[in-house]
Length: 388
Image (cartoon, rainbow, N blue to C red):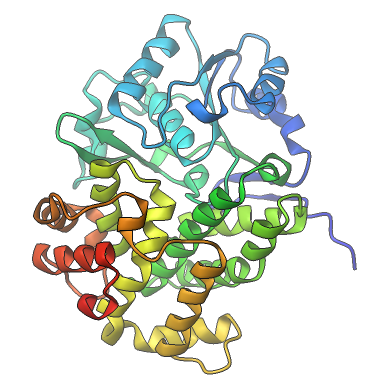
C-alpha cells in the first residue's frame, strides 16, 4: 500500500507534515494572526533559495539571518531589534536547531521588559514573563535533529559567562510546524548524520531518564526504531523522501519525549559546545557511548527493551552498545572529541558546568562534577573503560 507521508498532527502542537507543505506557509501565518512576520534563519541558510522562495510568499515579511550555529544572546538581541524596529507581529523560525531556538526566543522576548536571562529554566522563573508579550511562531525545520520545532525552550549561549542557558516558557511552543521533508533533501550527508544522531540521543536519554512517563517512553522507543531504520537511508540517499519524512517525525518525537528528562550526554555537550563551538548533534553523537558505559548498571533493563525494539539478535546492554558503536562508524561519526577539535583544556570547568546543567538531573545515576569530568576526559581521549 502506497503512503503519501501526509498528515495533520496535534501532539504536542499542530504539525503539518508532508512533501510540498511549505506552500502552506502563508496559510499558517494567517491562522496564527501573523501579518508582518520576521523570518529568522541561520547564517548558513541566509542565501539559500528556499529562504528567498519563502519570503516571496509572505508580503510584509523581513529576513533576519544573523544566527550562529550555537546561537548567542547577541544574536537574539539583534533579532529583537530588527523585530521591534519594523513592527513585526510574529516569527517564522526557519532552519536547523539554531534558527528555531533563536526565533522562538525572539518571539518570546518581543513583549518582555526583563532581560532574557531572567527567564532561564530555573524553578518558576518562567512565571516572570508577561504572556501577552509572547508573539506567535511558525516553525519550519530544515534538519531532523533537535526537534526544537515542538519544544517549549531554547538553548542560548551567554557569552559573558561562557555558558549555554535554557530559556523556558510553556507558550514558547510554536503554534504551527511545517514538517516538509523536501526541505531536508539537500542536507549534506555529514549534517544528516550528526543531526539524526542528536535525535537518537534525545530518545535514548529520555527513555533512560528516571520517573514515570509512559507517553514519553512510547515516543522515545518508536523514535529510536525510526532512526535505526531510516537514518542510514537518508545519509546514503539524500533525496529519499520516505527516509527524510520519517527522520523529521523521529526528531519531533525525541524532543517531545525529553520532557521526561535528558542526562549526562547533554549535560557534557552543552559546556563543550560553549567552550569549543562544536556542533551540538555531533558532540552528542561522540559522547553517547561513554555515558552509556558510565550508566550501564542503571540502564541494563531498559537496554533490553531498546535492543528488542531495534530488532537486535541478542537483546541486552552489550548488544545495544556494540550496535551504537557500529551505527556511529557507518555514519562517519568520530570516536573521540579530540577528533572534532576538543582538548582537555578547562576539563575541570566543563565537569563543573556539566554538573550544574539542568540535563544532569535526568541522568539514571546521580552525577557530580568529578564523574562528569572523568567521562569528558574519556571522550576526549577515546578511553571507553575510563568512563565506566
